[in-house]
Amino acid sequence: MTGKQDYNYLKEQILRITGVDLNAYKEAQMKRRLDTLINKRGLSGYEEYCNLIKTDKEVKEEFLGYMTINVSEFYRNPDQWEYLDKTVIPELIGKFGKNLKIWSAACSTGDEPYSLVMALSRHIPLNSINIYATDIDNQILAQAKNGIYAEKSVAGVPKDFIDKYFEKIGTSYKIKDEIKKRVTFQQANLLDKNYPKDCHMIVCRNVLIYFTEEAKNDVFMRFNESLAHHGVLFIGSTEQIVNYRSMNYVRKNSFFYERAD
Image (cartoon, rainbow, N blue to C red; front, side):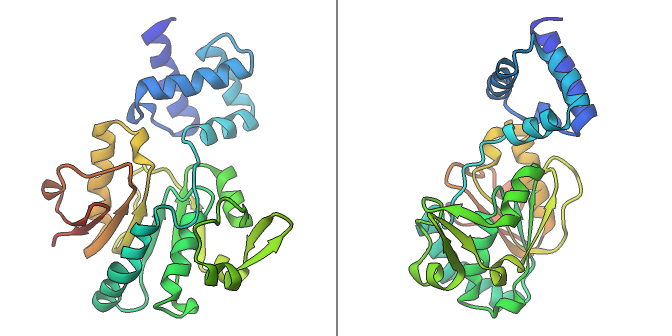
């Protein structure tokens, strides 16, 4: 098998072995990433790579980790977090009360859900905050649970939060347990059908850029169904929902969309 047939074989095998449907990902981008992995291991092609994924857990985990670029940092795009703090969180509390159900989808190394806990702490007691955080990559989730970050990752964190919620260990920063225990991490695939229900806010930022338009729109639709009525979706600066009205959203600003009914 060569060319298109070869890649189709790979997609079938990957779906069977890992549950990941590569049809949802942009083909040219995904091929480049897979070719890098295959070349790194000195393999002859997709078939040999699939055989290795079947038998080698480390190779399988590496594949899952390499599917997306885990570029994450606390308080990424500070103006968006300011809007969340000043406008979105007070509105959510006004509509739903202080026991908010919030899902951080594709949470990567935990920067985002921990940022959410800190942002909410300005408005709600810590013991009332619970964030559900998911990612496809178990290795990344292990890093998130560990909660140790380089100085660059925490550069955007407000100083009062650095002083209050982090412990400096050499050149790194460890997030304190009082923040960590407000987040529940779980492995999950956005392409699966099992989404949590009645979320007051869903945060999914700078992840869907790797998906095809069809897959991206399907996820946005399912996010809408997963939100409580008038719940809010917070997306990243690399994304937009072009047909948001037809998906039952009202746009609050460029990165925040509210379920319409």
